[in-house]
Length: 370
Image (cartoon, rainbow, N blue to C red):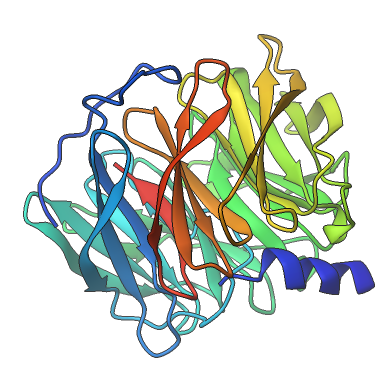
């Protein structure tokens, strides 16, 4: 209980215009030319949640454009989750959780900006994460009892509940952190912070089959990302213990279990909570909320992790959510207590160089870019 409370105090500390969707060539661009776009975060305000929109210049710096209401309410504080604000595969829709009003908003992303398309009950209490695969949407609810619930996304941005799609996690208070589809859309994966489990739900048509749980190699599995060949890369916050954080990599087996490739490769930092993989698939990054740093890992062809010598410090505040620019040359990192978004340029060796910072709402949560 002490470690769980410490982690809550660290990882939960936090808190429109036209654009082309451009594919980049991954790390190593010299000037970021052609890598402009938009970056989104949520205010997560308890009175009224909104999506903040920023324009990214070709050099990576961000400029605020304004805010668009989600029509729901935020939590007013940290969500302790990854994936609370996500773009659909088509990049046409932006999905946002409203943890304070127990619903999910879909906003249309068009040349004229963002417009609210729909708001739908989340199928539980306190939604904190969303996963999208084509038209299929699953929401992660962290209120008692924890569950996942499925929806279909229609051409107008509406969400329709999928019958018999709600599934409980291992316990009513599992402390979920993230939900995400595998690359082929055949599996849903959920991390449970309180139980040290990683759940795999194979999809049978539109609904999840029986939950298959694997024990996390390290304590407090939090954020994760899929790499090549159904490999899963997971951050481990180790209950917020000082300098104990790590990351592990797994392969997803035919029996829906996870097989360890690299187990608990240390960051020597505190509270590695969020994890992202760069578009080239060569590097993984963890945001270490308790140390105010970002760690880089090299990813081998076999999915193994190697801790990098490079470590980037955020100018202020504990880093939480992170996302890559549309072209993959920049990493945007949301900080909690400093209420900023810090932009880093990714070097050819995966190391990070600060480009600049911009203000963000004090309770901001979620980060997405296109």
